[in-house]
Image (cartoon, rainbow, N blue to C red):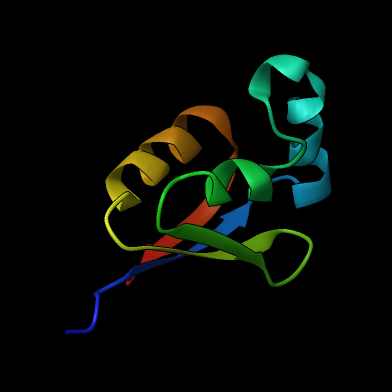
Length: 80
């Protein structure tokens, strides 16, 4: 049986390197947006340019989308 993964293509209003700065606080326990998203079980983030990333998740998509909308400036998000 093959697991089904949801795919998001997220274009952030700010460069990903700028968003990484919010993780400078030790309270987050990670050092980057990618590391935070990859911390969700079965979820991975792959930046494809300065502002855009592909995020795949087996079953945490709803939580990832909710977190991204609350904590990051999103220019566009496509769900597949």
